[in-house]
Structure formats: structure tokens, C-alpha cells
Image (cartoon, rainbow over all chains, first blue to last red; front, side):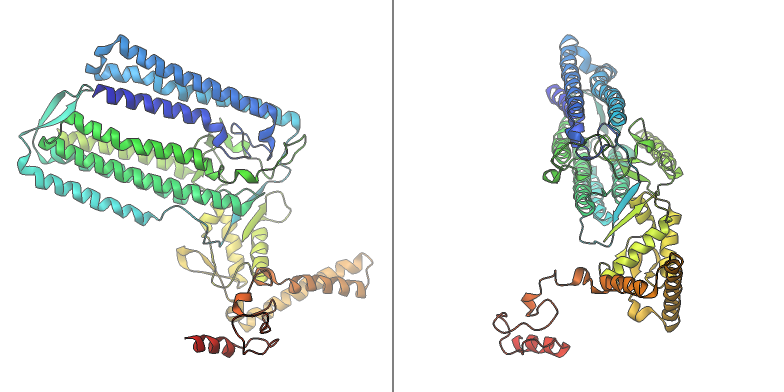
Length: 380
Length: 182
């Protein structure tokens, strides 16, 4: 039991750190450490050296975090009994690679900007391109696919109703990491059906993420507009499929495992193991898409890159640096997009220059607070 | 079709969008009934303001190139059918005005009439001679046609042996072989 959780946590730290280290190679060709550069500049030996150094440091920090985590577990084996202790122990190794990656990105971003100034790389004109009326280009799945969640929720409710007579009077609610149940609640509609509440909250979040992919800006690079639009469309479709599949797997696993644990068919610890095992293919799929497709599909047409490196005075079609604060926060009032693809990372981010983005953030906080209140009321 | 905008060009953005859509319709890249993205989606993809795209679409609607269908987007109008006599007269007057302005400019720079007419003819030939994307680049040999739309000679065409070579294809000819095969 404990081994499963330790392995899962280690796998999460390794996957996160590994992806962070690999990020510079997964980004678009005309961006390096969140700085717009000309095509072919990625072959500049200085930029290549920056990427290698960044990857080496992040990989080292990840390895150190894993080693530290395992060493701490060996030194404090009793920590599994205390949830607070384990959370405290997990926090540092999980966030260390992320914090180091962000700091290093900012450092190398300054270095790349210095190279850009020294080489005189500039964008004399601010061009933009959109591919229009090409309906055969792939795009993210339509929202209607999320109706697949309806049978999942109804099935969970039906399972609860069918198992209701067999559920004992005290329902196990919480177990520590060793698998020992330490909290029971009397059997009631709230305590048996709270997994449905969790499912509904997750579905709301996932459907919103799907909607944000559909509403996002679809970038196209002026040098190869249809190719980049095609690559982005394939990436968006793959990510939306992953989102849907992950959501279905997790909601089914959640609902079924908690209902079975309430009736006693499996232990609460067993339910947790089922969920952990269900999450494994999602982790693999997410890493696979990131590595195969790259951010915004940038790895799909590698062969089409220019052969030579960018010389001094090379020209870029547009320069977005002014709008990306700290490299990762996009602020542009004149841009109608609410969601844009991330600049240093896989996925999408908000355009904080639009008031709608702040409404989204406030909405998330409100919905999360509401969910927590409802769960506490239901479980008692 | 690829829409390009240049924020630093002297032309306003909505004029750039409008000109490119008109050019695409002329070249056959946009056919009647093609759906252009909604205002918000196009503004988002180009990274510009909603109002800019709104203006461009409004201008195109006024000129009769686009039809709006609520929130699902803008559709390219069939100018042959949608253009009323008043609109066609308007378009002709607009073109006459533009030509007059160009002729005045040409004359002001010391040019003469034959040179201007030759220049105009060359530009017109370039535009109207361009077969567009639906031209000979598309291989229609499988239909038994050559590049100009004429029926292929029987030796070149494996399918139809009894059709007269070199004759332009009439709609009835298209129906007959299909019926014969059915």
C-alpha cells in the first residue's frame, strides 16, 4: 500500500521534472526561453548551450528531490501515519523542480534577450496570419463529446442506489496512507453519494478546459501559415481527446471505487490504489503528447526547418516579447483572445489584459469554494 | 485561404482584411457559400481588436461580398445572384472613380494616355488571365476533360470513346454518360 503511494509520488516528481527539463525542445521554433527569435536562431551555439545548461540543472534538481524524498522517508518511516507530516515532506520535492525551472527560465530569458540585442534581430513589421475557410483542417473535439459524462454520473448514482441496502450503517470516509481507516460517517445520502458531487465538480472543470481549448487563439506563423495551422489543429485535437479520456477514466474510477468501498467490497485503501492505477495511463498519455506533438504542434514538422542558423540582423515577422510579462503571463488589451497557447510550457494560458480573464479566475475560486462547502455539508 | 495583416502598414487593418477577402473571392480561393470564421474567432486568431474585424465584415457586407448568418459566422455571397442592379451600378461607379483618380495621378506625373491604357490592360490581363486555384493546376483528366474544360480526344481518354474531341462540354453531355453507365 505504502509502496504504491511512494512510487506514484516519485513518478509524479520525475515526470514533472523531466517535462520541465525537456521544455526548451518542445516549444515553437521561433521562441527560445520565452523570447521571440528568428527562425534558424535555435541553431545558434549560444542558444544551444543555454538549453543544455537549463536541462542539466533542472534534471539534477529533480534527481536530488527524488533522492531527498526517499531518504527522508527512510529516516522518518512513521510519517505515513501522519497526513500532515507526509504532505509537508512531499511539498518541497514536488515544487523544487518547478521553482528552479521558473527561475532558470527567467535567467536564460535575459541572456537570450542580450544575444538578440547584440545580433540585432528585429521585427520591422508586426505581421500576423490566420488560415480562414479551410474547414478540413483538424481542430479540437466539439463540446458535445462531453455528453459521454452523463452515463458515467447516472451509472454512479444507479450503482449507489442498487448497493444502498448492502451498505453498512457506518461508511468509511478517510484512510491514512497505510490504508487504515480513521474516520467513519453514519450512512446517509450525503456520505454515500458525495463521489457524485466530486464527479460533477471535476466534469465542470474539465468541460471548461475543453471550452477554453475551443475558444483559444489558433496561432499560425507567417512563414508557413497552413503548415503551422495544421500542426496546431492536430495538437489541439490530441489535447482535447486526452482531456476527455482522462476525465472519463478518473470519474469512472472515482465513482466505482468509492461506491464499492462504501459497501465493503474493497477497502478504502484499495479504492485509492484503483484511482492511482487509473491515473497512470493519463500521465503516460500526457507526457507522450507533449513529447510527440510539442507545444502547439511544433515538433510535427521538424524536417521543414531552415538548414542554416540566423545571422546578424536577421528579421522576424513579428515580436511578441512586450506582451509576455515574466515570460509566462500574457497581457494584451488589443488582442481579442481570452486563451492563448503558453509560451514556455505545454498548454494554454489566459490573456490577463482582458477583464474576462479575471472573471474566469474569480469564477474558479467561487466554484471551488462552493464545492468545498457542499462536500462538507454532504459528508457532515 | 490565408489572411495576412501588417500592423505597420499605412493601410488600416480592416482595409487590409477587406482587400484580401475580395482578392481571394476574385481568385477563386473563396467560393460562394464558404464560411468565414466568426468575428471573435478571426480577431482572436489575428491577435487584433474585435472592432477591427467587425468593421471589415461590415464593409464586406455593405459591398455585397458577405452574408452574415447570426452567430455561426459570415458566408461568402454569390455575387452573380446576390448583387442587385443598384449594387452593380454602385460597384461600376466606384471603379470608374478609382480609375479616374489613377489617371489623374498618372497625368500629373507627366504620363500619357497610351502608356496608362497599356498599364491598365497589363494589370487587367494579369488578374483576369489568372485561372485561380480552380484552374489547370487541378487534374481533371479523370473526368475526360483537358485543362480548358474541353473533352479529351479518345486516344488520351480511356473512359469515353464516343465523345467528339475538342468540343466544350455541355451540361447534357455530363448527364448522358452517367446515365449510360447507370
